[in-house]
Length: 394
Image (cartoon, rainbow, N blue to C red):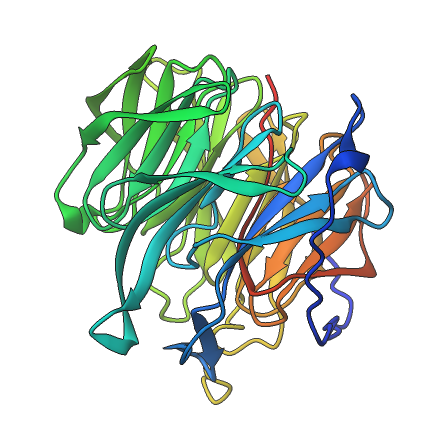
């Protein structure tokens, strides 16, 4: 089907207000939150990423999805990074802990550059106020990470090292278990997604264009040596709640060509890529809806390029595709901000969040199963929203 596009609007908010609010209002079974990790170290200046001089601390924003419109509950300093797929924050299924990866930090010897970081922050988001309760060491350049739906294990892809770090979770204690070697550092292990049964994980490798499969037995994680091929530079990846499919964003070379997303059939033996569709320039964020019917894709659409570039676009795009069997069919689209990153669904699938780096806000859209609507709702955050996430429930 064809998608009719409205005229793009700016949808920008000026000014950021830090709200150190309590999470007491979130008590009860109906509570639902989202988290955004926000990078203050870099800015996009006419298509070029520049390190900010004497940057403010990076932050983590906790958002109440039960409010209409969603609102900020709390925002605290937590190191993060826009480098890597927009999956660098994750919630435990009970929404008590947030894990935040910091892929890059300002180079201590040259403040105009960044170097790989190796920190994973554990945040007690249920505390009043929320607070960092542990800082753990990962491999170099920790990027995309996931918590299993059992809430007992976290995996972190180390993009500058070619490894995946393994952490056990027990209550509020997160403990390092070890690392799994996948490939040389140049392979760019970018993000790792875990299947609902907790027995398999898929790791994207944007440096050499593979997706690797891991086996999981408790806290024992091993590389199976099974690699899939989807497209140029597989980056973000997500698995449906029923475990039948995974969707992967292939961000390409960034040369102005249209890029792709792919569908992986996890029920096939062995699993394989079964569908690839063209979505536009640089699909960063990708997420499957909680009911497993919709794939949401954030494309930069050239909004991260210089204005004089023939590939520049003055707005990004959010695209929705329906999963029909093992096919992807376009169903809706909306304009978003510039240099946009992650995308997340509310538990009922009716609210969609998109992080806009340049605007420094989280855009709120509404999906009713037929139409995707932007009602002008924006959540200002302190920093560029590098990743936005809701909890993956059992």
